[in-house]
Image 1 (spheres, helix red, strand yellow):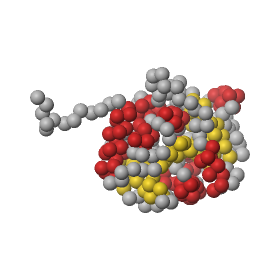
Image 2 (cartoon, helix red, strand yellow):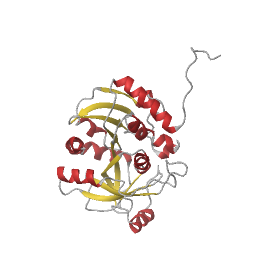
Image 3 (cartoon, helix red, strand yellow):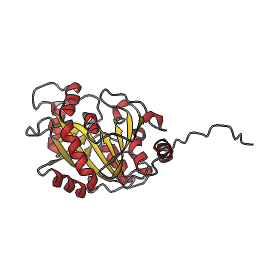
Length: 274
């Protein structure tokens, strides 16, 4: 006979775990459904402040399946906030693949957003640029990506089409808000070390223009879940071997802080259009 006082077993299947997290989120916030999710990457945390005061904020680790942040500059908290009439779910920080956790943990936030009712996700990151005209502090729309992590969040014979993964409609909305925004192809390396000059030469040869250590796996999981995806990179440095200056994580965070007002204004203007 089952003991009614016994704790419920933990559900570990990735999609069920996301559903559990979404249920806990609704209980914690009193919000039955969020509409859009934002994942704030390296250097983007100050930009979240420009979105306004959240109605709810708490550690991500309070929800099933989430872990405390392991990277300096990543807040590890979740906010529920109204932006332009849209109920937004904001993840301040993310789990990176280089932290040693499995790929399902990396994309758990995106799947939780889908389970919470979101139809759109905005994935942001700090990146290195191969284009010297894109100086640190420049936002770039992600047009496409190249996955160099040698893995995928999708399991089994589930053949998901990634054509136009990064929504042309949402990119066009960004261009209406800020005409002249450039677009690029983002390349995700596993990390945590930065790329070598030779690897950057390879990226250029295969058609990449931005490099980083996040976003791609989340974007794939978002497409599998049926979400519309907008990707925005903030150039925080020129890629290895271009400027001749060693790469530094503190520089990445400082660049984000310097560009916070611009990035926050861009997001605030784009979200109501989604």
